Length: 522
Image (tube, rainbow, N blue to C red; front, side):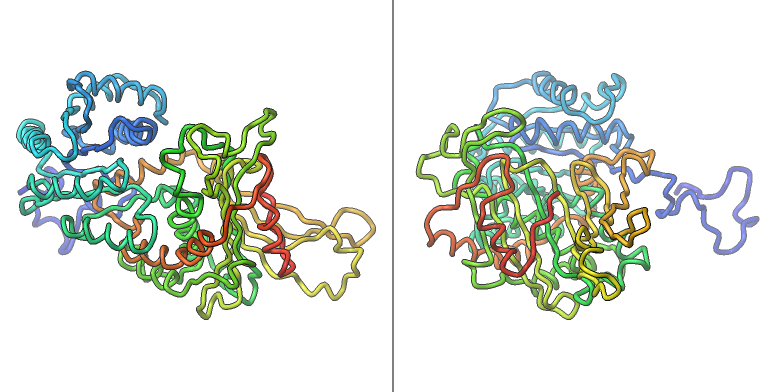
């Protein structure tokens, strides 16, 4: 057993109850480094693996957060040797890594690269995978700890999980772990999500299932909890007495050319609202947890989602659209129906907006407006708390005509930060009030760079920290909220059309106008 005493000092010379502070898990001077382990990526030839996963693994190694024995195993149909796989990882790192390339880091990391050729329904392929992992355990010291990243279509989840069970990879030896990482979408409605959870949980226990929502890995999203609960300033006004509405927007300026195979039939609501935006709603609306442990945070999020329902009637409180031709970024772009791979009769929505009510004491009467879309004005994700208007008793109408609502805005991406908008007097001899902004930006406030979301989440998987991963109950509750809107849209014809480069169809603006509100212009 390793001694925790200082060299030259006997245990008898130390005071009773003394602990070495350098061995305190709370010591922020020492980074939390993953223990011996290997990661297996299924779907290693896809865009996600190439643009996000492999660069994130290199960045973790470059920051010293992976063990020297770490191994990365690729699984695909391609006829590759280990060196060929290494070249694929190298190209991905060179193109997409966040941190500078260092040859010594790469050389050490590349020693653990392995590739297994095979298909998902082939028993022999998974036997070869099990043999490869056993060899790594004995030769590289990966310790029998394996994470399986399913970067594959959801329809392939059941067969891969079953193969992992049959090959014994899902049943680790005592003292070791096997974890599975699942990418969205988690089903395409409540029924399919329940069935998918049953399949996955029949092989892996819930505590070993990590459902990735990359939004939860973003610093700005995690800062919602810090801003609320580490400060006394905001929590007293974080309720229906002061908040008029909450608007959560995820807008993209890109179209869907070349992505018809994935997107057609799924649409904006399933792709974004079900996972990303409802998770942002839960973090914004939740009560203070006892601590930031996984169980406590999940319990509070589940209480919010269980209290959330669609505002009705759905014809007045929801909107969906499909982008048409227009101008974006100074160039002419085509509409969805003219994109490669999309049917001219496609009813897949590229824009979706819904109004939600959270029926609890804190939020009763406060509408939550969620919207997402492709080919909108610009790329932005934000959460905006719109506060109620002040009575303005001392002011006449001319003094406040340029004053809007106070707002607290979390800028999730791309310009990460927080904006507080409030009224201030305009310099001069007249009492004129105008909106001004108080701005906090991560880029200027901190010397540290924010890690990419996948870096944080992959490291949490290897450390066994599930706080930032939704559990099965959250997934099913999210579908329970969204399904009525999807069913309503399916029974009521085609989405509304909106011009590319604008902020969505007219029906989205009318949805808020009926209650005297407007969408915030990001």
